[in-house]
Image 1 (tube, rainbow, N blue to C red):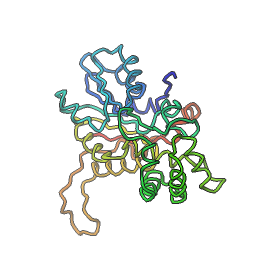
Image 2: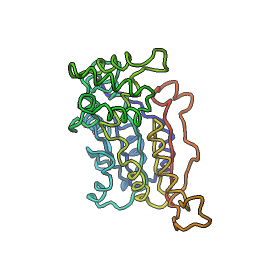
Image 3: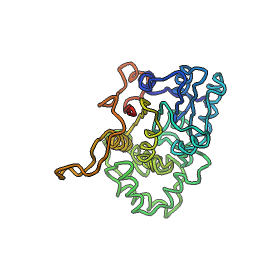
Image 4: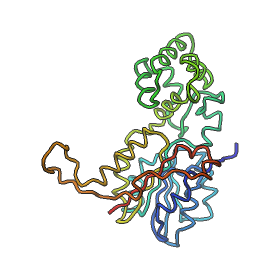
Length: 308
């Protein structure tokens, strides 16, 4: 399958990064290289882009697309949460800008055998990094009923989580649940008809987040990324659902706050000083033209922070 992916909020991200020709930039979620290409094309002879991705297929595509920039671009196969170790290994202390496009790519969803979609039949996989040991099959067939309830509630914000978890456990007693359509049918039969969207959407989101540990240490990573920026450097993050967006907002609020004391205290005792400012107080959303041409952009929110 050809790697097709339209970069979300592309112009807004490039503008938000305020790219300096000889700066050092990080794209934490390279994907097919759409954002990375635009960043690298604006760099001068001393500029550098370091790109991360857990998906080796995406990196292979990006390597081909970004090869025109030669040594100006360095791509790394790992989670962006390991960025500090990679920068340390490269002898890089500070960077001028960081971009994170969170969530799953269109290619991953549309490639049936990756197991991300509740529409296409495929083995229950959902790994962005196919070398990782945990799959959606393991979660669905091995997690206890109470663990599934917590998972679907916390990561999927699913209304009928108990019904769905109970049905999964009942079905797997007879035989393992192996494919996406098997699971999708179990979910569909467990909830009342007539709801908004596909009934399996929230459960599949929860499984994907769990398998890929998408929210684990994200808050701490955002703080660390902001603190690796030069003065005036920008951190641009695109989120796609309320769980990750809340983490982004909470991290930004801490970085941009002069005081984090309990509001009941009469005076500040924390001595906390803000480290950054918000470039946009409200999230940047896709415009009308992009909404028409890229369905993935409908839930996208871009938040930009600038280091003091």
